[in-house]
Image (tube, rainbow, N blue to C red; front, side):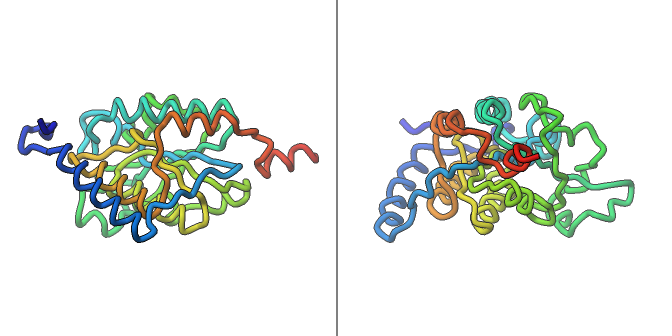
Length: 244
């Protein structure tokens, strides 16, 4: 029997089994054409979360994602492994400044971006991730963690070759971050179960498509095992500190 899901208001059903059958057929086509190759892991990873602030990961906001408790729980496994290994971690959140919000992009004409007030409690990284003071929070204005930010330059400075991406949403900010990450030359990893969205099927479809074209989508356990083997001396900042 097909497993079906309803949205929070019970408006429609979603057939997971049907989607998985479609993916199985699509994977055959992609592999025949040379898609879905593996990037693999590099030697110096970093982790970035995408919009895992309260507005996305807690209930009661227009941007709230489904299954945010589980998404945060899975992401925390990756974050804790990264913290233990000394891996650089960068959080991001999208927010706009002041009453006039002069920094608000045209994107607001499509979705209610003006609800993301940068000084609001909603913009704080969700406590379920146990964020640490030394983990930078980058305030972005558009979808990708890279667009208009210093993230790429900072990763290059550190000598990072692999970026692990987690957060929300699958169809927009995560997807654009993943595409930019690969475009900047980083091996890009997306741990399964760490990506949120608001509409059934959107996460599954986007993970399938990103895995086919832009990133390696892998089980959380495999990503954690990789992080457990990292030696923090691989980062350029540590090498500089050892010489001074």
